Length: 303
Ligand SMILES: [Zn+2]
Ligand SMILES: [Zn+2]
Image 1 (cartoon, rainbow, N blue to C red):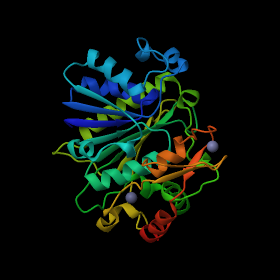
Image 2: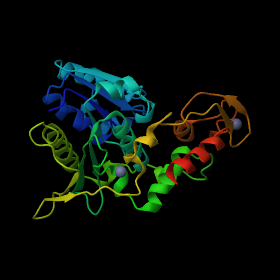
Image 3: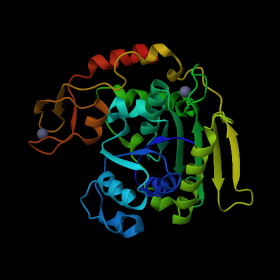
């Protein structure tokens, strides 16, 4: 059982997961999410009933969870998982993923390798409203256990690693989140979150450490759970100590507006800028103005 955890993502799945984790009474939980609460969140889930639209999700959630589970210290950090300060990774035992993009999962895999964190990740949707999965990616000292990035096709892996570091990407569709509440029933969300919390508590105990694996869950099927074991891919870049020298997530020193061309100094992460950067002058999307050097580095690292 873990003592301290990071929960990445506080959507439908993450907010359920946080409550199950609360019952396990860890010492500390860090909640990470970039989003502000919207009306639809509050309408759809009783969890948010005392929160208000426009509030930061993690700030509202930390308050709600502190009241419900006072034995645990709940800390909310507004941002993406890759923005979290190193101290949190060093202090935590496990990274619990409830994110909705593959890019965030790749970032989690990199963080897990670098900071020796076990990862328990879950996802919803797929072939029916009743389908989800819970994956366990343990850290091991030799970096030989399969990670999320090992499971991707070579092409998809290259695409995501490129997006992480590259200068221009015409369209962010490949990283657009799916809204799981449209593709899963609330019952499915609840069950997957519960399995994830239980797996996280059991999988990493000293007596029985599970190897990398996924529990594929279909609540509508006769056989509800299929266990799939994962092998580490030779082409995955996250199993070589050399890859983790230097800054894990490149930062950007100048942002340029893709509409009006206004350039401003900045210090945000390249990935963050690409997802969230907006021009003060015209509201247009910002892109990194100085990422060319990172492309070269990325080519070397992931060649
Ligand atoms: Zn891997
Ligand atoms: Zn502009």
